Image (cartoon, rainbow, N blue to C red; front, side, top):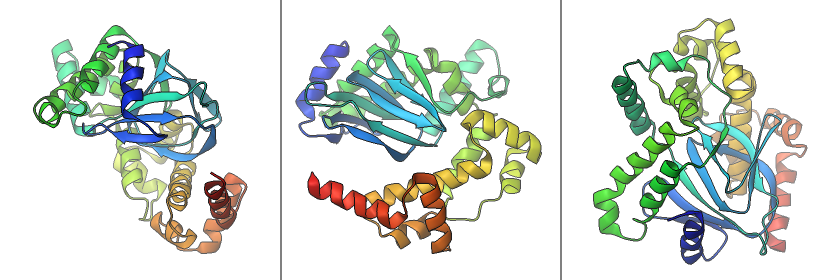
Length: 297
């Protein structure tokens, strides 16, 4: 199944814009025919493979535009601005979203290191910046095709789903994004673990000293390595994660107050100030604009 066949596969199964579950854990198909400007989202560890059209992500001013010549690998939770500004009926966006399971990816990295005669900690080193675009290769395309072939057949998914997903992960780790992904999922990578802790505990107070202590580093070393991996300081990263999650919650129907509390803000005025500084609108204006857009659509 080449890219054209994957596109035809998605066209047959996704009749409306949005995400469509395949029944395979963490694997979704998607379509977009309306242009959507970049807006705040949080990418969880994932791969996004485009077979038609293009998609855009912006991480701290760095722009990543990718189409069917490259896939996007994001091995750590990242607060980004993302959208489909060029999608149209004439040039629709079709693609596949594959979540990266921490446990399985780490197991594979360890197994690969053992087979190659080295240790995971030897590649943890200096983490590359949070998103990487990589060229499709034959192993990646074939593994993705074999994974999607299971879609819609509950028996096949039950029996072969985990094995085919593992095969896809392995192809990813062997490909152009492999070193980048192995840095994040290697057992010695304290920055990736720190990011995972932040992502899972946004409601709780998070101090930089605690993050550094969890990583086993001095505050100075942690700050340097964290900024290299994310393009943001730890404080800026935590704030952006909270605000992006809050913006997504508001878009999903939460009230402004609920969204603020859900990501750890206890002061509504502080939340409003920081939200407006980040996005140029108050949370209320953001919410009202979303409702107007929905009604117009």
